[in-house]
Image (cartoon, rainbow, N blue to C red; front, side, top):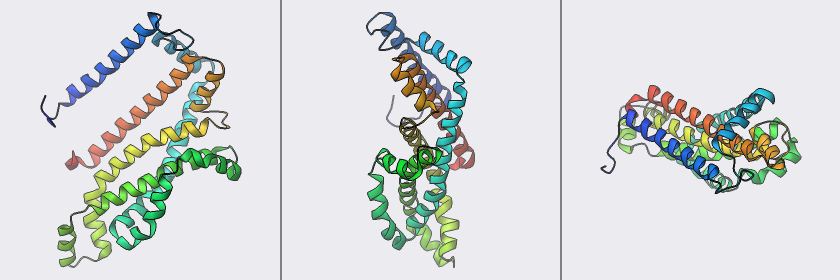
Length: 256
């Protein structure tokens, strides 16, 4: 192995799958060998059986769909606000000076800290859960986009200005095309964070969703259901990550 030497796509997939195989094998050995009691950690086979029962008998697909809706809804709302604001902050320094201190202040406040206030303002329905994801995502998106746009090479901006481009033209024809791949990559990363926020929101006052199922399993001491809920989050998150990466490669092939 050499530092920064790339691997082929096939080798990358094989190595990734190999880690999962080793992880599940170690999990099976720990549980089957009695190193950890079944009450504290169910084995892979028992966890899969629990997951099958959840889908077949308890309509778990509905909980999965509701959680996905909440993640996508809150994330899209955050992107609608955060991307344009981040572009404006990255391109125009007065706008950055106006917004950046407040956004930096807010992004250090955990989204979960807003839940008590949001329950008072919006109740425990969908609005509260979407608001938690929005708050947890919008400030991160805004700053990441602002940094990306603000890193545009100054010589390209000066060249466009010399050729007669106005401020709007420079942003549209120079800054955005160069920053678009990294903006898309930033959105991919923040989408992963949005999953952590939705589970926190569903742990409080929820009657549906994967987080609600995990809380129910805690009360029943059903570690298989807990683990399967976590596995479902990981599977859906990994699928969305792969889809985002594929879309980015198709949209911006020159950046990869």
